[in-house]
Length: 227
Image 1 (cartoon, rainbow, N blue to C red):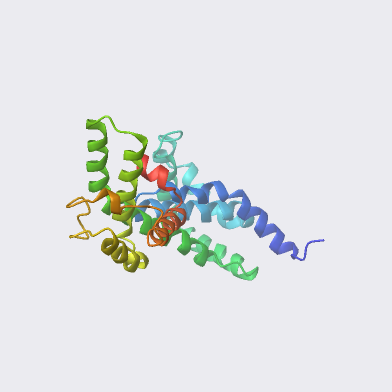
Image 2 (cartoon, rainbow, N blue to C red; image 1 turned 135 degrees about the vertical axis):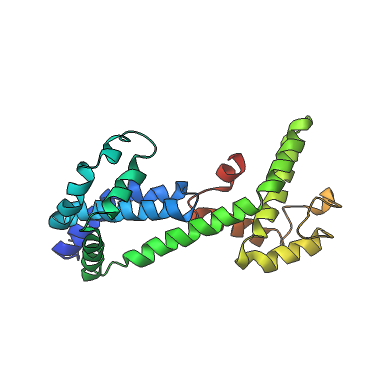
């Protein structure tokens, strides 16, 4: 038998129905897109939990021609949320959603903050390492590369990503010493292939740390490498 109260069960069920919307954070590329996903999540919760507040907002959305014109397009969600935000009932809806969550001990702000910070951290890290990834991929494309060459290239890229992750700075500095990188921000200068051994103990925390950052950002290393 569940120990949850009826209100907690109701909230949990509504939350679970919004998991697909919430998962959209993993596709966001900036703060604006994250804000849209967050508000779509809140609007979805209101639809199932707060019919009166939801109706006040949806009445504005369903009569908005800008929303109707983009149904079924990639701009559909963004336009729907932009319209909802202009409704006189929007602020009341957001307040009611948070009140409903607090009443069942659900930390909606904390949940979203974790997702948002993880995604923004990962976007910044990947974008910072994008130039070296492009250079590595260009080099691989210009020669008859083997599987080992790709693995070596990915290892250099992972190191590059780690340079943009605050919590991995110490591990990155350690690896720079191990691999004898003369300029830590330019790992290809004086690159010594034999020193870049993923079996070394010093590599493991760097590798796992970047993987963990990818997961926090709703991604994987393979997905980011192929992007």
